[in-house]
Amino acid sequence: MLWTCPKCQNQNEECSLYCKYCGERKVGEKPIKTSQPRSHISTPTPKTTPKIQHLSNPEQSFSHQLKPVDFEVLDTYAAISMAVGFICYASAIIIFFFSLFNDLGFWSGLVMSLTPLIIGFSLQIVSEVINLFLHGQKSWYLTSKYTYVNSELTSELLKKIEMLEAQIIKLCNDENESKN
Image (cartoon, rainbow, N blue to C red; front, top):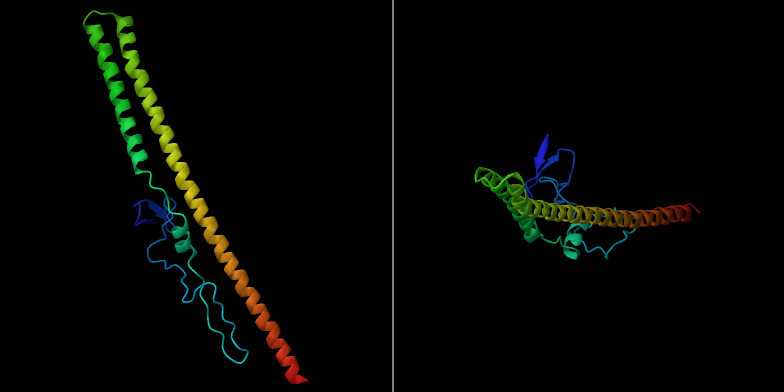
């Protein structure tokens, strides 16, 4: 089963939480949010129940730090150059057949249609290079986003584990002192 990304309208597998094209979170999946700033970590007293602290939202902070560059103009140039390339191919065919039907000869028709063929081929190469660049940019952005999110979550989890270890050690020490 597939789900449609609300941002880019591409189809993704049901098991993926993020769009594989733009990195948008799956609709219905809530990002982990925090009620406190990240720098404020309170340590509960040993006799009270610890408050549950939520992780920050690294996706949101990544989006504020590095916004994806919008290459709509390049995408438009790629589409236009592809279309004009096909028009050049069509004009080369028309020129070739026009020269054959007007008794200009096979070779002169071939020479006259060579220029639009070369232009059409060049435009298609330009279009493909632009598309490869755009694909690389999207891949780089998604890789950077996932790396950032994973490192931020890992860092927060390690801090919370250290805090819990310190609390456990303190509780054990308090218990040992109370027994003595």
